[in-house]
Length: 42
Image (tube, rainbow, N blue to C red):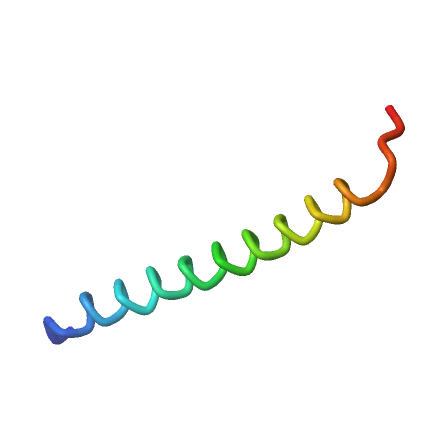
C-alpha cells in the first residue's frame, strides 16, 4: 500500500463529514425557522 493512500482517504473522509455536517446544520436551521413560525403547542 503506497503512503499517499492514507492521507488522501483521510482528506476524503473529513470532507465527507464536513459536507454531511453542513447539510445537517442547514436542515436543522430550516426546521428551527419553521418551528419559530408555527404557533407553539406543547
